[in-house]
Length: 274
Length: 366
Ligand SMILES: Nc1ncnc2c1ncn2[C@@H]1O[C@H](COP(=O)(O)OP(=O)(O)O)[C@@H](O)[C@H]1O
Ligand SMILES: [Mg+2]
Image 1 (tube, helix red, strand yellow):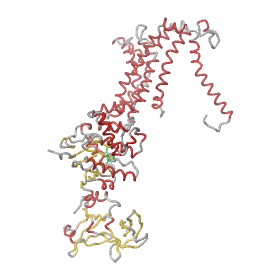
Image 2 (spheres, chains in turn cyan, blue):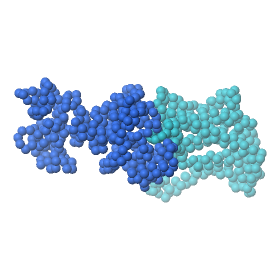
Image 3 (cartoon, chains in turn yellow, red):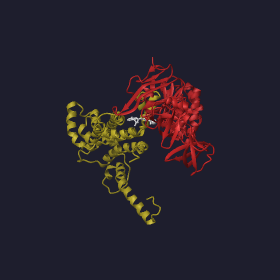
Image 4 (cartoon, chains in turn red, brown):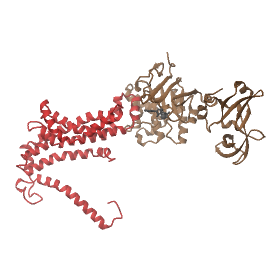
């Protein structure tokens, strides 16, 4: 599109194509937003815009469905999983990036290689184990289950970054008064900030949006997350209050978008090369 | 008791990598007096950086009693406990800190001085290095020379027992390198702090060192004043590595003939001066004559070694003349105008009394 030599016709075609793609992507979202503000009686009307803006569905979502509790659960699940992933992956990635030891490379690729394994297959054994050791229907159980995925990709991203940082910087820190640990957290960690923010974002997103693990590992009495609550509210698809469903969808979908915008600068730095 | 009272002593330092397969330093011995500026000189890969890193504690020597500072064995101490300041070849400034915070980093970590005292030291160092105007910049906003000044500032404020500089000027352009080496020496003199300065540049070493330690293949070849390194190299390697343009080498036979000692090579047969002849009085043997280009003369009279001028190169106040003498290239350094041109036939006179004499293993015979 930046080619100045394209004719007006080509340009129009290009812009038209762009508009079409944009519309295809955006229409579902617009539909969600519009529906969330429609009164119940207008739901099956063919009109785009509601006759009357209604907040009934919003009130119902909080008062009847008590959806804020599930949002809170999603937040705790996502944030806890992200924190745990960082706590495990940062030292792990650092050791794999900096220390020499036997079988370092095979060992590392074994860890990263687990990403290829279809982790869906692990759900049943994990559920059984969690029930047996008392982690079923707990946040800790959720957090640990998420790590199966979060730790390998976090380590993958972080190790690449740590390996690329000049070793001299740590050595300078150690000459000028730091212990090895201080050199790491005073010099290496601040430099790794964009990557750490990115990894936190990805791990949070995974925990926040997860459906499969949360659905299997939690119940309505425990830390059921928002995405599972949305599904449950339709009673498995038998009863659908569209406007309520759309409000819940909005409430669950917006936080990651906001987070993305906040983290965007760091994400761009981390993934610039790809 | 090992070690001089306040200097640095390196004793039988050995450092290997890769489970002993790569020997970076082998039996390195150095004795650096307090306030002295020692230059570690040698070609790339000879173990200079490794030696310096062992002194700083960034590498772990193979032997337990290799590094002594102020009479204390520091071999296994952490870098931060040695009170030595390292200046890195690529500056290794902290990119996320301003110049000011980079310079104060060590004092901030040490935490013994008040904020005001730290600021005073930073200001003082910045003035000495003429970087007062850069204090609020970030390292990415500095030129190469400025970066090295900041690296020096970070070292100076520590008031360490010694400065360890690893080729600090290698990345700078020639003019700046010459300017900064003088400046570094002046600062070292002013602070009277021991300094070890690593370089592969023999000219740099000769100009700034109080003493020079020449290294090759992980071993120290000679430690001496610049004058002695230049005038009395202890082996052929030192003789060839030091000096520019490099020395002429002649493989010769020593022969006793009719009461005289003669030096015989494919292109000349010369009588040794009486004093040298006495030293080499032993039986016939092979040796290597090393002669600096300034000790070869372009003669007028008959005699001497015949040759043809191949090339003349102007080196400022002096001229290098390359002469082809029967297939052997001889470098001649002439003050001012050479008085000869390419293609001229010349006769060369070797000042044998100024020559270096080595056995066939390269050890000095003098
Ligand atoms: N970390 C290391 N691992 C393996 N070999 C090394 C390491 N550091 C240095 N060496 C080797 O030790 C020798 C000396 O290196 P170095 O001290 O860097 O030389 P210089 O600074 O004189 O150029 C070289 O052969 C180099 O390859
Ligand atoms: Mg080096």
